[in-house]
Length: 304
Image (cartoon, rainbow, N blue to C red; front, side, top):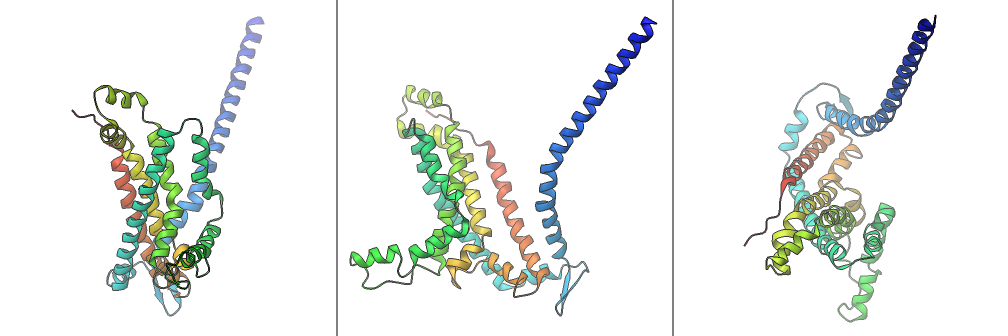
């Protein structure tokens, strides 16, 4: 009888353990499926829908679900698409370069020259991300406008006789505002890359006779290059795909490929054609991300 009761208790405990394990797996599955489901529902599914839509036909205000390459052929044979693609990518390169040129010295100064106040300056750099995107753009419209701060200052010191309208509604305004908006996105990966560089490597470089500039050129900069490339890519992608900023501060002179896509989905009323252009824009972005991924193995080497 005692053996039977002990066997029953063992069976009961094993069942309880199995039930606890299964409930734990269910909870873990629920925790994992929530973020994955969010990504699938709001990221992958819309991309698949845009991809499918790009292969549909459009005739007389009607979308016909027949798969074909007509939209892509028409896109490649449209001179305005090639011109807008080149203009958008070239301006995105300028935005990425400008953001990196500003962000790298800031990140280097904060990580190397400041000691106990790093977090304060870091927050000051990224705090614009807490402000509404549209509010920041409209703030620049006020700054660059005829009655804005820059025009008022230039008139006050005698450089201009009257306020100028050349600062707004052109390609310069779009590039300037997008460089400002993308600056925190370029700053964060550069800051992280510089902060992770062991200080003993720099001390060893100095012990071997290298001065400060050579230590930076041979050790610090190569080790921070992946963060620099990542930050530049973030800024480039933001400048390449944004259509709100060109609409608000660019006017007709700041028209980009993203604005053309938005027009095809709106007043142009040809969504399959706009979807084809959106897919091609996404391909360019994926190529940039692929190049960033390939640059992840850059190493710094101290040379004699």
